[in-house]
Image 1 (cartoon, rainbow, N blue to C red):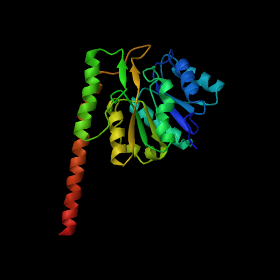
Image 2: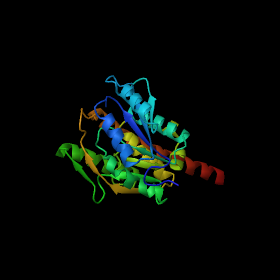
Image 3: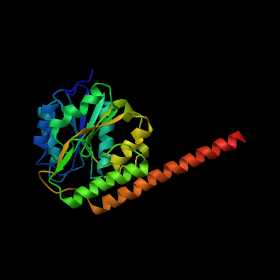
Image 4: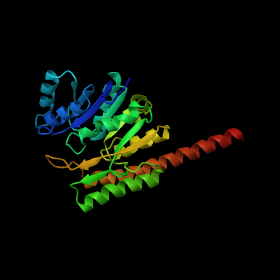
Length: 256
């Protein structure tokens, strides 16, 4: 039986140049969920993050490492990690960043609705009641908030925080999503996965979190990623409309 200590839960932690952050964040994650398995997915970090992950795994059987040959995007790293976790028998899968923007202390609350079987996807939300952001300037706050609002309106979704990456998934919900069809771009990956879960009938809830800017290093967000996200959101909605038209057309032909 899954519980708030993380029994049968896997935490998927993508890394790229997170050598300074990884030891501390790994310890904090397993301190919050002592029974969980931590999977570090490293995209060939040139700063030695992968080697640090190997040393941590050698010292703690709860830590595992997935080495990828090169940086190939956050979405692909998550999908790779999800596959490993599901194959490893996870009943719940948590995704989070390695830069301390997602507080490990919030992990039990994030996992709670999965453990009580009251949700299939739990979003750690900056924009639900009680959620907040620290350390961001007004411009970045507006971009993030408007990105979530844009996706919510265009895709007709109810969740307030569609661009955040701090989530807990019921394993069966992840299994029902065909990974091959996911665009898996950096920023839009979060939106698309929530969309796919919603369209599959998943029960989605939001729990408030405090989001903080990364402690060390520079953000990997770029203007190109943001523009890509907006374009893909429109494309996702257009694909749904086209698919609906085709279904109605086939239905009309069959009826005729």
